[in-house]
Image 1: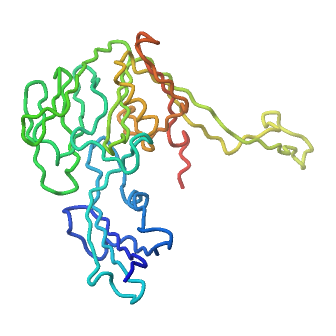
Image 2 (image 1 turned 135 degrees about the horizontal axis):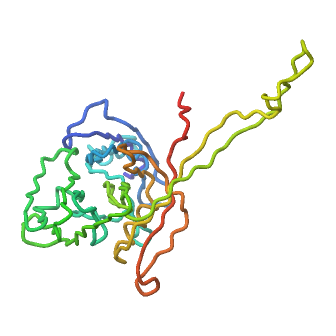
Image 3 (image 1 turned 120 degrees about the horizontal axis):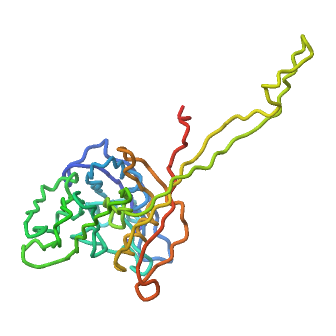
Length: 329
């Protein structure tokens, strides 16, 4: 007896682990084993990612899904299940995150704090949000006050966002034993009397929403685009033309608005947050009372350090992900 191929049913759903229906069947796959190989490899990450919807509207919801994979192994000689009753079931919790190349294949990302940096900057008088993975955290201490973390098993609360007042000082994440410290983050309150701070939110490497405030000078510009045609403005009845009508006429006029924003001075450790924002596919800005999609226009990232740059400020250019004139049809 020898393995010939594997048939896969892939269920993707929200709610409770293992509770799915026929409507949650998203893919059926089949792959044969190459004669030169001893196993069969099937990559499902990109397939699952199509069903993780990043729909942020300043609401910080858990964006995870359950994935149940049912694999049926088929014998080369008999065409029957191999071995007898050769079916296995696997269930995973999927995040829309990523690993770096040096993390090697299929890296295990954070199982507790879904936040890389050891610093969080919050405008004076406001609250920040800190993402944690409910399964791996017992409690979070914010400014001396404990928040106990409970995990109901539902995908809707696997990623939880802890409210962080600007005057907290520190935030400490504890293991499920409530005593082992997993991560400590410095909470820095920023008083900015001159400029308006803008909150930029992005999906970080752990698949959680993370905020970066740009505290200093922000400049708004836009580049207009158009097309021009030459028109005939002669009145054939009078064989004259009106001088208030031009020969050149614009049409298809529109523009994209851009922002150039500055973080203000940050710790060198905060560079990791800026880097993840540059690599994010989904980015939003809180702008004039609305949550609006933006795209990092800057494509070149220069990593700064206290040794080379003394005080570290990042300037990032963004553009809004929509036209200035509404042409949605």
